[in-house]
Amino acid sequence: GCGSVLNVNGEVEMDASIMSGKDLSSGAVSAVRCIANPIKLARLVMEKTPHCFLTDRGAAEFAAAMGVREVPREQLVTERSRKRLEKEKHCKSAPKPEPQKHLGTVGAVALDSKGDVAYATSTGGIVNKMVGRVGDSPCIGSGGYADNDIGAISTTGHGESILKVNLARLTLFHVEQGKTLEEAAEVSLGYMKSKLKGLGGVILVNKAGDWAVKWTSESMPWAAAQAGKLHCGIDLNATSITDLDLL
Ligand SMILES: NC(=O)C[C@H](N)C(=O)O
Image (cartoon, rainbow, N blue to C red; front, side):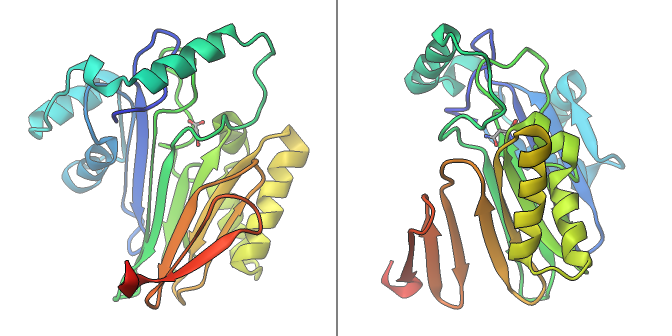
């Protein structure tokens, strides 16, 4: 919530979704305002309603009914995000189908000790977006997907491109067809780039504990924890590996 990118009116409007690979249960919210953690609201949609997706006013009413604390809208706006919006508004070049740099969509995938996979994706979207613009992040199959039989994936990047190719499900389709996680990510991100000039990134994990990270954007901050080791990086070909015990 706090520090999210701002829409054209200078407000924070957030999208989030979550899914369990065990039974495909899912929850999503879009265009939500004045809460600190939209992903928690998405989880409540998954666990406490018969639906998968709530938006705008209905999502706000549900949040209030669940006792989610309302945060005054100014509290979610930072100086940095205000400056970023100003910069974008004064930028003369036409909007490009590239993810704007370092804009903080947060995605996670996990495999637990029971062999269940899950994903969660949460975002403020893209800077200077229209009011009510919904991106890929809350859309199951675009912003993420999880199925124990295949794996879990969370995506980031240019939302309109990701939506058009259903990037998350497309990548897992390639896994189902026998590709490795890495190959599948490469093919689907390559498809999005060649079809739409859309750039983005993905993180994936499967039941065997294999994982992959891949991006076509300039950089993508990522981290993976496995077998006592923390792998992380931002730029291409620059991965660091640390012992988790040492942290
Ligand atoms: N930075 C991002 O990943 C933005 C997000 N995919 C959106 O378009 O809403």
